[in-house]
Image (cartoon, rainbow, N blue to C red; front, side):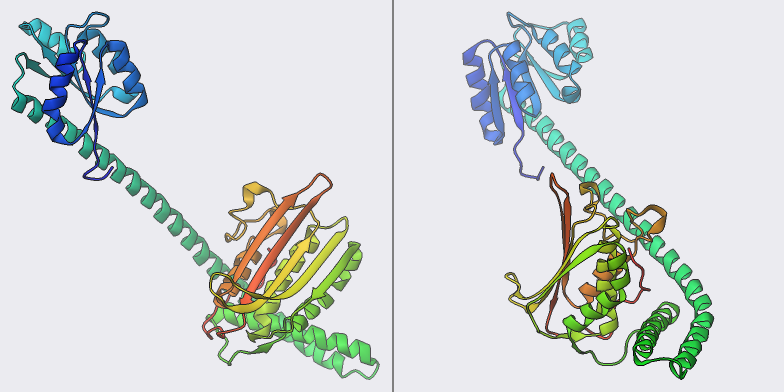
Length: 396
């Protein structure tokens, strides 16, 4: 309720002439004036509207003022509504006490003094308005406190994740060096044919990416080199080659539709990490087989007019429950129980946002099955800054 919002004032009297006189007197207040000619009519008005002040006659034929006040106070919504009695007869102290016990806040005697009536009604109307404003402020404060608490909890989770990731990355460094040396010796071994050397070279590339991730985690390393022109085709083909064994083992049919050759300015390892997460999740969702469709299109965003590449990764797997739709990009949230870390999609979104891009998903449930599609849009320019999103690659 704003400072100048009108409040409702309910006037109750069985005599139309009196109601008209009250209306004339109180019209100067600029509030909403409601009229009721009986106690029952007043109760109907109260149930339909939020009323700040009830101005009622003590003597009415069907329900007198005391009975009506009792009924009003029984309703939880009206336990604090201001009730002002108007009486044409002299009330004894016992009558006044009886009225106050039933919730009256004031009495006015007939003949009514217009200035006095306006002053009393205005006072209680303003009190109601201020009370509503205070309640609104309290609700807003509670909401802000809840949001801040949630942000602090999330921040603490991320800090704990960073500390844990640093410890793990430090322990990984030594075996990484040993594996790297072993691959180097294997690559030079005379017994290997060209195809075997190609697989060794691919393993070395992935090992280099793992080493890069551990450097990021240990020392908040950011890529310092300039972004390069990246072919999304090559990134996706490389990811699919790495996942080819899992695709065959799960009996998944792959459909590729690459319609755009538009290059992206960026860092290949980061983009590979995004699509490894998305494609890996899609394969995980189709353990009993299915169809994986990957489509690349050139697109112009209607809202911004930016040109870029849209990559769609769609699967016919188990789908995503609508209950989790708002949480799947949260850190630590996973639907894979103990098998998932809950970091893959969060990391992927962070990388895409670094490129000023977007990542969205849609999961549909049909009678014959489900379909889930993640869409990544990355603008072709400007190039992302060298200060980026750096967290270890983890499938979500």
